[in-house]
Length: 210
Image (tube, rainbow, N blue to C red; front, side, top):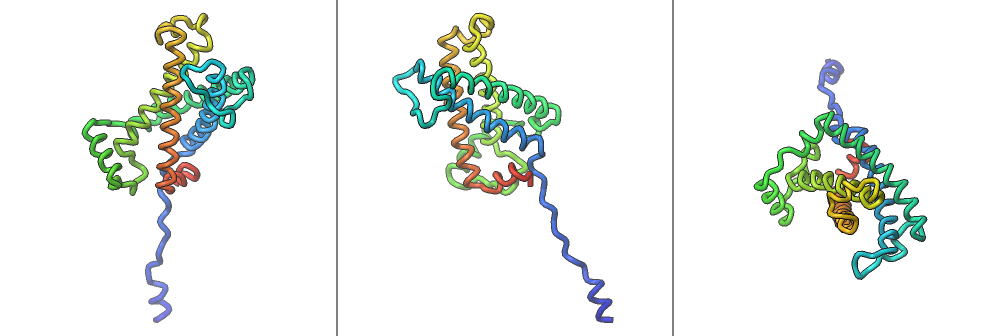
C-alpha cells in the first residue's frame, strides 16, 4: 500500500521557459548590431576627412585607416544594414510584431514610465511587453534608421539622386542630417547596452530566445 501511495503522489514538472524573442528577431538584431558598429566606426573616419564641426574622432575608434579604406567598409556595411533592415521591417509588419509590441504609444504612458524609470520603480518582470519608454525609443530608432539610410544615399549620389538630396535641403544639409542621425543611434546604443547590463535577463532572451 505504501508503494502505491508513493506512486500516486503528483510529480513536479518543470515549467518550460517562455519564448520571448523569436529566432528571426534575434538574427536580425545581431546582424544589425554588427552592421551599425562597422558603419559608425567607418563613418567617423569619413567624417574626419571633412569635419562638420570643430572636432574629429580619435583614430583608435575609427575603421578603415584612411578615407578610401573607410569608404569601402562603409559601403559594404551599408548594404548589409539595408538588406537586414528591410527584412526586419517586412517581417515586423507581416507578423504583426510592430503592432503588438510598439503600439499604442501615448504621451501619458511615456511620462508615467519615464518617471518610474528615473525613480527606479519601472518594472521589468514581463519581458514579453515593452513599457512606453521602450516603445517610443524602438519606434523612434526605426525612423532614425530610415532617415540615416536615405540621407546617406543623398550624400553618396547627390547628382543621380538629386531629388532625394533636394528633400534634405541639399548636399550639406543632408550631411548634417546624417551626422545627427548617427549621434542619435550612438546614444540609443549606449542606453541599450546599459539597460541590457542592468536587466541581464533581457540580454539572455536576445541570445537564446527565452
